Image (cartoon, rainbow, N blue to C red; front, side):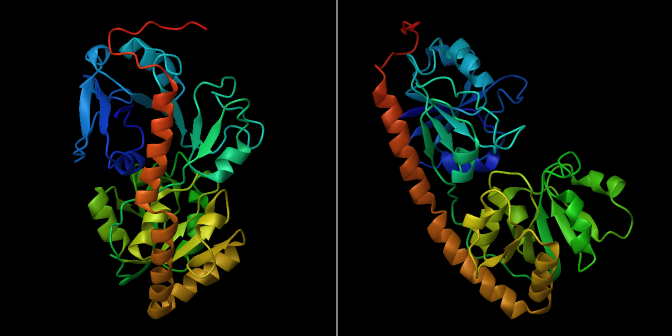
Length: 333
């Protein structure tokens, strides 16, 4: 199939476009949020397509990820998602702004299914009449690259200052009093202006995916302090790399990190004691990390992830009569 998808979340897109389809990624002159294109990524199955070319490009199904893409897809392709353009809506986020009363933007329709990335999200969003499907994350295996030679905690947070309490950035100094906390990700250079001198928390840079895996894997353990996120891909990748995990018990983390592969709690003292245990005992950390890797390979299998998406995309594409590019007659029902 020819699958149209905007480059919104690099890590998720990287896993998604490794299937057996042809993936069309919109690009515009500005290479902004609405036309980022491949952005230098090596995705052999993906092809950039300009906004101007989309109207004459055959598309079998579109994967929408933002409410604005409903109108944008229709404008660019000349076909209306859910009517004469098969579509699914991929929801990456936990509900916002309210935890249990936020109504999903596609709740008031039944033509486009909503694909949630966690069972928590499906349960907590008000999905209304929309059909919902859960496809849990799956990532390519990066290999057991963990070394843990640095007695430090590794954290991955993009924009840790802007996302302060949401990402749990405010909790990091409590761990920085135990050992260095190295924060990876975009915008981390602003931390020095927000945290007091001597907090033990420092920005470790914004690396390429390969560089991040290499540097993160040198830290003794992975810290996941997020209060509100679907389920960070960095948490899954850390487990796949063989890292032990200390994580805040929020959203989907309790299901993602079972006992034995890490420690999950809402009590900071429990998490701090777990971090100390890994910091002082390399063998203990390595054993927990190895169990984390075996668990992640089973639970977040990339082939299973792609197979589930194949089923959803195939069903969506077969549910509507095929309308070729430039020949669609929109139904206004």
